[in-house]
Image (tube, rainbow, N blue to C red; front, top):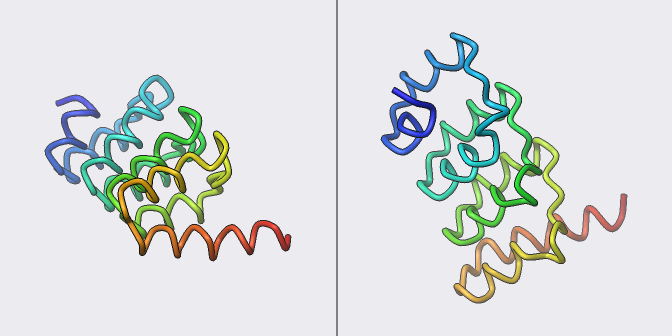
Length: 118
């Protein structure tokens, strides 16, 4: 099983095994993390971040995928891992706004205020 298959199927046990075996996540870093976000696979996002996936990979694509689905829990995981929420001229906020993802918009704005005050 490949990394992307494990993520897409929500097979977190297979994902854990692949990560423990030392699969090179850098080759598929943003793809796997973005795909996990698109599939609303919170545990997969957590496992990939723990394994060293870069939350800012792919120009912020993982956060944009969380915005598209309105998944605040995944966005919060990415935030805690150091995602730049203002990447690509606030694309995540724009996408959430277009999709009417109110909870995500509120989350984004609360984090944006914290970012500006730091």
